[in-house]
Amino acid sequence: MKILPAIDIKNGQCVRLQKGNFDKIDVYSDSPLDQAKLFKENGFNFIHIIDLDGALEGKRINTKIINQIVDMDIKLQIGGGIRTILDIKNLLNLGVERVILGTAIVENNEFLLEVLSKFDNNRITFALDFRIEKNIPLIATNGWTSQTSINLCEFIKIHNFVNVLATDIDKDGLLSGPNLDIYNDIKNISSSVNIIGSGGITSMDDINDLKKIGIRECVIGKAIYEKKLSMKELSSVN
Image 1 (cartoon, rainbow, N blue to C red):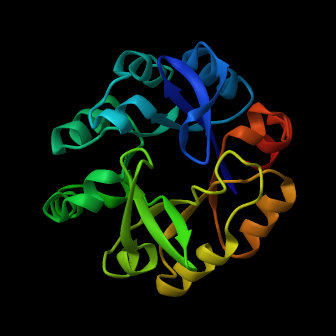
Image 2 (cartoon, rainbow, N blue to C red; image 1 turned 60 degrees about the horizontal axis):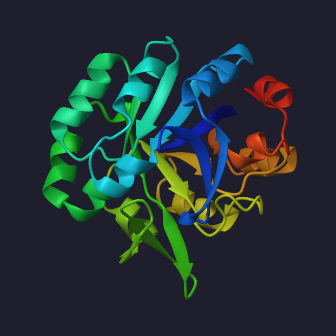
């Protein structure tokens, strides 16, 4: 299992949201760069970074901080406010391992098709964040503030994605365990897709449950910051 510790950046700080609610923010560090250094020192070689301000504004905001983390020579998966082909090219040229795309590929099909045709899809992570409504996973966009009626599983079914970051928004930041049922549904649709588990992962049992259904990567944020999982035990899983 590859563990990707998470750094969410808002107003230049390292934060976590509860269920994607920007009115419920916990600040864990005034320096995302120092947090990234701490992760690296503890044996993590792949970090997940989201520019929350960028996700809300629809354009990259915390570029200075993120560029400083890029200079650390560590693998990064970066998202938030990435809306153009040029954004993707610039980040890949900087040395970012994977670029995370969400809102733009859900709301603009032409952009999605252009991404699929122009880039090595191993270098793109498609972030499909969802809420369950009437037992159906529906995709949310714009930093989780806009709810669509697009069925997550149907959206994955019609596209040839390599990496899918599927986050159950109603579990995110609540330490309540991941949504294994939805991950199984996705795997039944496409056995080859690399599902990156995210949302609610709290314990080693959660990680083992993800392993059992064939999940090879997961993003962990609040469980680290709240010390539910130690960096030492997670780095040993890595």
